[in-house]
Figure 1 (cartoon, rainbow, N blue to C red):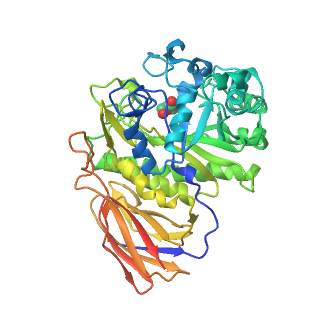
Figure 2 (figure 1 turned 180 degrees about the vertical axis):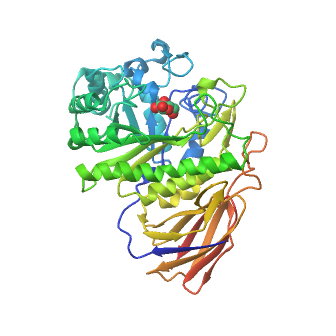
Figure 3 (figure 1 turned 90 degrees about the vertical axis):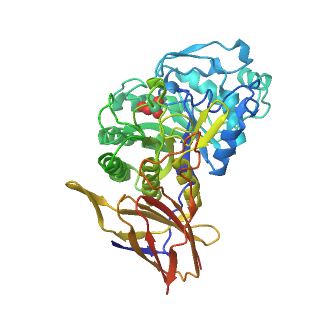
Length: 493
Ligand code: AHR
């Protein structure tokens, strides 16, 4: 099978924001408690209660931002429960996620300590579903006001003298669903009112993100852009790759080619919805000032047998890695509009980077994709044209190869390639117009089985390896990409 890729190496215009490579950590199942927060007295190595192995792993993939505290949890979160001496904090019920007791031991200060340990930017999602305008307003003052006020003094009393720098601020989560079952017209008015009360104190500048649509709900985007585009910096979008029904989505690890194909085809739908929401946004915002923020995305399978189904713990195979790779390629290619994205979720929930079991921690195939693709962070997107053969299964087909390319600050060109076909290798000729390549090297992520995954017993079943099958042929790069693989090439001039 043969494919051709033409890259305009001298025509890059748009920057791929590093924030496209963002993450999401909700108070859900074992994401925060166990996965991130173990407490200062834990035998698990920790820094001020935050587990060191998870921080170290996430720093390695250059996590740029972290969204918190939810998700649906954010729609019922009252931030004042999560400040002050831990033993005095009230407990509450995590109603959406198993009705378990929320100790509030991980709150504002702990989250911002986590972000400092990760060297990433916080993305806080405020409560519109059940919170008040003044509650959200006061949170911003508590966090970012440097002067004299009861709230700023309370922050100092709780151990933080300097205000934090907070940029990304979500005004509600899924307000068409768990965040209030609102109509877009009603939420658009509420959005205007809430955002108006969020002040930029001192030098702090909030990047205000309005709640956006789920999947292909274009009417939501139309109304929000029509009524409130001027008041927002970003508009969110949520889309999960789900097979079957909510009751039976299918196993994360036991599947055949039908499910492999269906998952990748559904993941490719992201391209269509990003384009169509983008077209509506263009109508009201032709200069693309408002970013599309895909702040929840990823694969959603049945919870692992024997675990609490409300905790959404799932394993993560090579199939999830391909879904992540092709989605990140889609975001890169639309980086003129997509300014940020957050895969769901960081640890122990849905398409996680990291899984933990007591003191053990493993990284997933999806984690490795984020590591390999980190070269695109803040690089300049290079336009490309791919003519690939189709990967057909049954009566359906999708393009077998999927790619994006960028040039980084040192002038290196990176091309990320996903071969979605689990059966056939792909010969690729890559023409780099406007470049004179002198060296090519690469990394590959693949495995013998399409459902290969890492376990606590065998943590390195799926991991990247050096890829030495790409070579220069004159000024072209040629390679044979193995079936069901992700390759990231580095090309120097
Ligand atoms: O990520 C899990 C849940 O999915 C989030 O809480 C919610 O926003 C979405 O429906």
